[in-house]
Length: 114
Length: 113
Image (tube, rainbow over all chains, first blue to last red; front, side, top):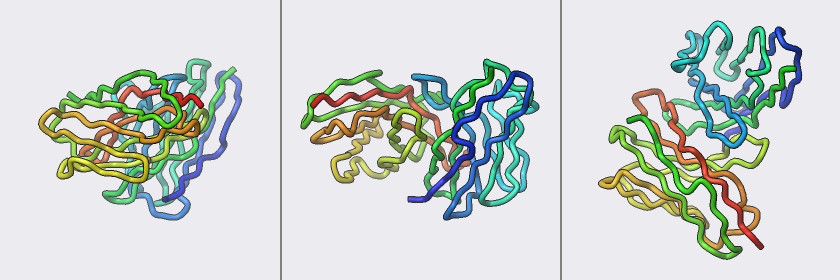
């Protein structure tokens, strides 16, 4: 199957700092990328959908000024958590989709804000 | 109407047994139903998926049964193995909504040796 990578796999930062997470589709061009967050023992919650070259579409309740998403190319999307606070600590997962095909998920990024 | 309800929340099965996880949806516009497997600390991996024009799909030990009239679909894992112990998520999406996946709540499966 298709491969999606994320970097970093885990990050610890101080409250008030910004953190950038990268999501790359390694062997296909992703027309659409999705960003999810997942709390322990819970399901995946979609945060936003991004199409290459377009502004991201955020789900209701997700602050677009806090979670900045950039989909600059067909193989790279980034999520920046701005002014992170302890409540932003979570597992962030991206997925990538080529056209009408299946979504392939990255391995996730564990964010811990102290 | 956008929800996908998954049950049970947790499941314990003996090695060699059959694991069955069920999902129900309301929105008849959904046209793609995948199942994902997730190990702790990892991203979800696609197991098997089905579209509503098919009532059953089998891949190895994994089978999806789909009941369009009842708006339900289920995952059957035959000859369950300890390595199958993971969390399983069903999901549903509509192609005309950009493939946005609506996930079920997840089922934590434990297969005892």
